[in-house]
Image (cartoon, rainbow, N blue to C red):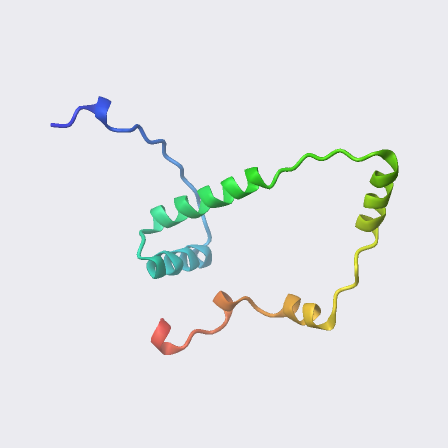
Length: 101
């Protein structure tokens, strides 16, 4: 019999998701050869790490700060190609061929 001291204690995470979201996650997990829980936890951890690593602090002098704000306030207009991509349905929402169902 294994001692509880030798096994890592795990916390429980419970989430509710729409059936469509669960279906997408299950499909992706299956494609990776993973169980749903394993896939969701792995994906969430990667996203959390990316979010944490993406946080940056930088200091600007007053003039550079004003230039930075001006750039943020006047973004480039989206190209026609970008506009077309923004209205296109994502790949996972497009109809599937019968062989992939």
